[in-house]
Amino acid sequence: MKAPTKYSELSPLEAIRRDLDRIFDEISPLSKMRSSNGGNGMELWAPDTDVSETDSAYMVSVDLPGLSKEDVEVSYSDNRLTISGKRKYEEKEEEEDFLRKERYHGTFTRSFTLPSEVKADDIKANFKDGVLSVRIPKSEVKKSKQISIE
Image: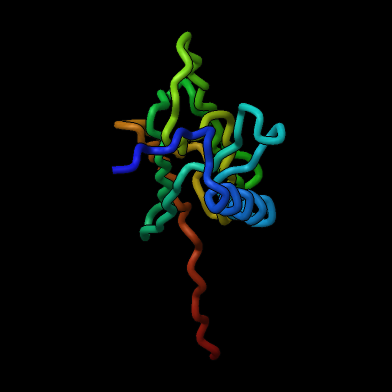
């Protein structure tokens, strides 16, 4: 059985695949990873997010494994919900030989434009088991009234 290749020792095909991934990451607005300094250290990342709607509220759920609520900030201004935070890089005394490295660290920001019909003062955020849940209640929309002609 062939021994696994160290992270730093890429085959030529793997190196080409990574280069192509990097190119598509740079041109895609929905990219999961963006290099903030040319790939040397900190990376910008976008955590996976679900947005749903009920009759009474909008719900935003964000997967943030390994973060605590102190690492995350939620704000609302001008019909925009913004969720940002930072996953710290864990430096270790001993260098490890990575076989594969996929966990991102660094800052992230996700913003969502909401309709103006929300109760901004009643927005609630909850952080449990690495998942941030934000509930944005809808305000009552005045229904149109049919007027009979006499």
